[in-house]
Length: 308
Image (cartoon, rainbow, N blue to C red; front, side):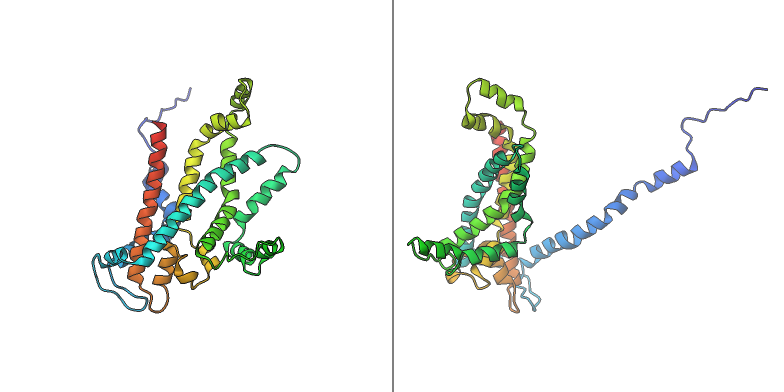
């Protein structure tokens, strides 16, 4: 007698499948829970706490009371705040163009597959993985009044230069450290973008008689324009929030009359210590956040404007 099989109904579900589907909505949250916990504790909570404190007169050891917009009104008449804003803006205007152009040229230099090029790629990337404290101390030693740079300048008859005592030279020295440390990082980003540029475009331009500079401007730059926008956005935010380089160069007490301070350094000096004005420093932090978001939106808007 032939056996017959009864087809299972299309809509029928086994108990195991039904149990798995009931558990499915919670499973992604279980996997994301550790990351969400870290973000909540170390990102969201400090952000909300800073926002709340900006409307109070809280100090380090004294719970504050609600003062409304008084902290923000005080910022408008604080000379040190405007000095910090000026220096942070100047930092962006000098550092960002250098970190957009120089890493691209460096990437073009090391993208060629020639013997020994891996050594130079590693050498250019080494400052990225080095500790900013170590890097800062090295450059402080170089720019010190009795450091290597001043010794060389004195040898050739120029004389010693106050790289760490003059306000503008100190900022310029810190900018040098920022650019030097960021070159390798952005070079890697550009190398990834250059790898996607079709070689045929360069060959066609060469056939048409375009030289190296013309091919760079007409082929390479348009091909990596979106990457240049990304680098510009990242370096703008990093430059505006600079702290370590200037802090290490100027020292905890700052340079001449505090004229070298940046906004983030001013936040640190105002909000720390036993009598630190946490509420006022939080208001400065909110301003830094708003300006940073504005920089990002400005870069993205400029990119979209060029596309249209």
